[in-house]
Image (cartoon, rainbow, N blue to C red; front, side, top):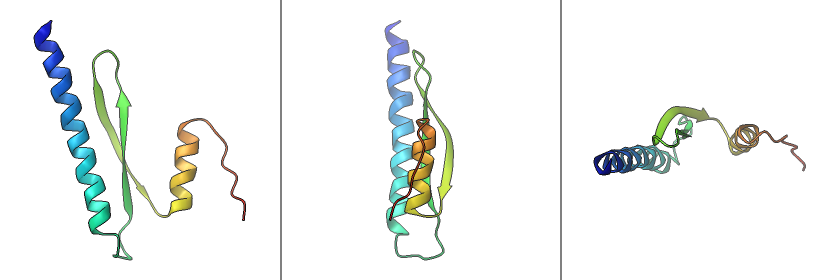
Length: 80
């Protein structure tokens, strides 16, 4: 039982390390006009841990906000 806890902790740390690597790549390519930002999608598998479900590519800030709203079941209204 105690060993399983370490497995879940290790799994969580590994997923967040991969997530930080993706964010770091976004920062390094911030000035590259051809680069498309990537967003890691982490899925909760309670009580078994977490998983990196997919890596989404996001074209712009507006699209990123729209995806986050849809993820939470909300409607996105863009006002100028």
